[in-house]
Length: 500
Ligand SMILES: [Zn+2]
Image (cartoon, rainbow, N blue to C red):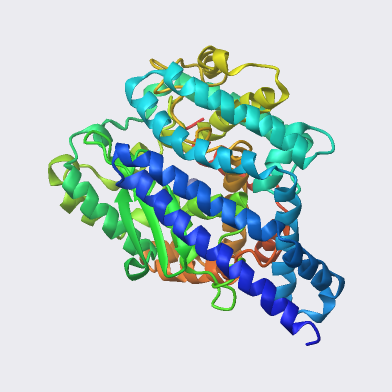
């Protein structure tokens, strides 16, 4: 190829960025799981250093000239390198708009903010976190102006996670959910005690929960030779590459669901990362796609698979054996109902499938208004509680269980929450399509989860970032993303469960 040398130079520089990202990820993992408090300051500085180095490469004159030269001759490149160059150009465009000192300061701010958030949450003290949150929001408001947008400033933030999606589209998406789901939720609220999940709130020894978490992750197909499972305040997954994929969960003595479904959810993310195609795994395309696609995988496993009756048929006896005092005399259908109880809960990550998207609508609206400057961070606890009452009919007993519950804002993840709802919608659409090709119910009853993993690998996982989110959905489902299958699924499932 005529421009081989140019390409080699670019790939070599990208490799450096990838190494900095690798080092940063390890530090981030350490901060979230093990690092002592006194060490945070220095670790944050080092993270700032690495992001500064990446910034330097992306803004380097020669590097930029080479990228532009390759872009002019893009058709000479193979599909993988073509996509790499296009995506790198997008990064450059984004990053160039932000002054280096602001970018570095921001990254340092974020790593500090996350540990302060954890402390504020533990102490139920919003004012501890407030100064950090204010700085993050101020940065985001500047960022949307640097980045630019067509209609709504929040569009610029959405674009970081779901390229192409806009406030205009999301308002329609969420209005549909509100219109069709809220009436059902209100009916179910009146039948609050129709289903009980008290059996899941007995004493579940934590050591036994850990044992079962490892079992279930393996059962779904998570490869422990290429990954690990630890604990953190907020469960998350992190991929260094497909050979080192890490995830966390959390354990509470009186709550079996939290660790169980937390582990299953993160396994969905991690299995995705472990299944990235060999051809792209060492490139910048070698990770999961948009957040809406990533969440579709975690939610497919967590809800559509692991909250079905068929999934538990082969393994419920194992769960009973692990916790005989609590479950020995509980038949599967009672357990199935318990894990599907709908309740207007305070905590998003513990919300049931049906009410989940209302938690997202609340955050979506608040973020939009914060970025527009319609509301101010000082008022957040009050606004949060008012809207919880409006949408879910329940008011948090503390800020820890309210406005402080999610790590996202401390991590600078504004524009991220809508991806959860999109992920759920995508998951239902993908499941619908998978059911046309595989007998999913039988596969689950026989415990052959590797068939599902294989299907997802071939239709979604192996592509990594090689395709755009819409292309992935079209490959997997022959349709662009829509909310129809999601709402239909929820209405059918919950009408049946609650006999409405
Ligand atoms: Zn997730």
